[in-house]
Structures are given as C-alpha cells and as structure tokens.
Image 1 (cartoon, rainbow, N blue to C red):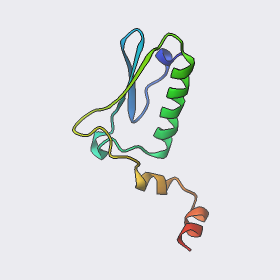
Image 2: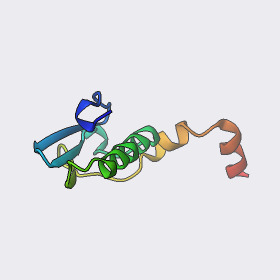
Image 3: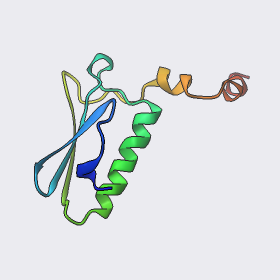
Image 4: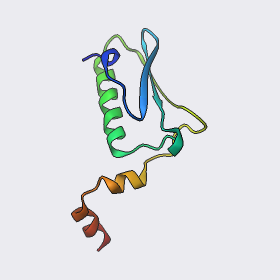
Length: 91
C-alpha cells in the first residue's frame, strides 16, 4: 500500500506538500505531541514505507500546536506494559 493511500492515524497525519515530499505532522496537542507506544510503531512503519518509495525524496516531521514533541508518553508506555513486566521492574 502506498503512503498516499494510508488511512488516517489517531495521533498524526500524513500530507504531501509536493509530489516528492512526505510530511508527518504529530497532532496530539493536548499532550504536547508526546508519542505513545502504538504511535511510535506506526511512525516507524511510515518511515520504512518512505524508504522503499522511490518517488519520495524528502521526509519532514513536524508538530501541530505549541510544541513539536515532548518525547515519549511515559504514562502511555506504562499502561501498555503487561502487569507481570511492571511488577518485575519494580522489584
């Protein structure tokens, strides 16, 4: 599936400001565009597809709102970690 045909994502969007440019815009403004585990995987998949698409030459990542990105969503990472792993890491 081409990047141009991908569905919308929950916390970021894809656009093509020029035929050879992909723009990824983080859009989780209420959390200052921090990235949770599923968003991180989805963006990694987008960059892999970008690497394989010879029609795209430039990739840009930006953020909507007042912050580009505050980093990883630590609460989101913790919520997605299985309880047994959390208990082991707290020991």
